[in-house]
Image (cartoon, rainbow, N blue to C red):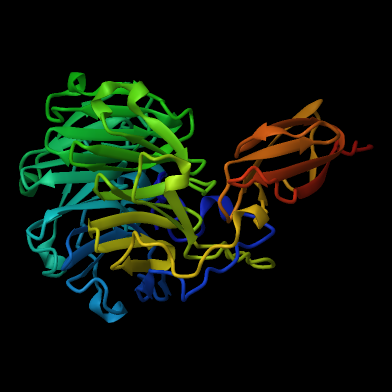
Length: 494
């Protein structure tokens, strides 16, 4: 299969923060949840076997149509989204061109022409137009999205200059006469592009390059005259004339700090919301007003927000890559105005090569009475009352001690070896419950505020890292502890 997309690199494998975790999040109460789960069947693979296709995006233009897209060039649709799995139909539109990212790896054309690619986002302007975009620079368009595989036409936006594929990461179609897509990959010369089309069915797209290097992760157009792009390192770009070329896009800086932004949603021109890598939601009722108009709220999660949807200015929803859903009936009201619920508990897979797969990647609300969420392993959640509080009352805040799950990353584990005086370790951590932040204690030092990922330079010897979460009332949870050693390499004697 082709190289997975940067934005959805764990579509068919795991949620980013779950990698190598040592503890699991508690399962939510099924009776308390407003969300119903169904799971798509595995996708047959060429040469035999099958695998679950992770779903990276979903769009519900009405309550009687939802369209999802994801791995293996999967398009799934339903005209009864809240019904069972049988109401969701899966197709794989034909794509005959060689996969550009595969060619980048030096594979022969015969091999590259057969593996399916990955669709990263989908947007429907109504029941008569849906557009999906892929990591291979492919654009899938249908004026009859429930008409089967042949109802989708596939075009390619790669310019053929040898610089590789234009990795399309997201698309937004505020009307049938305007669609806006963005490309990611800060190490790719094609990253940081905004592509627009006033006639998506024609296959013609106009591309402009924003300031680079730039890794655009999401786009939302509340109207044809307001679009917001979000990017790695927390950067936000806004345009009131998205087809007006590069100069029509103004950067609002990184109002929420350097944390990578992915999920973004605009409710008309009244509200835009975006989520970052530490679970914070940024909101603005005046997105064209610059960085000062954006307000950051801790919504209870502590990992990358991957998708968002705001059906009205008073209803917003977001998902993250730990299987959590965050909802609010007052999105600009601060941290206390957001509720937090884990829908897919993290379950470690110790002793196997299989990695956890509890991430949610996309969200779409046709109205305040229907929202759909999609994620890894072909999971689809729907709710007809998505913004109500779960029926089971939460435990008293004063007695809630948030747990911390500590994760090692970048091939660093309990023992490391280096010839240098220091080694750079990087740790990730999160909490399955609502938090306002974290504190870290390195060896015998004091606890200090910290955030994931924590970059930690250590010398030879034994070390201890302690990380604890801070609850909504300021109550500190128990520390997650990891002990490790840094050794000098053994000298080889001749």
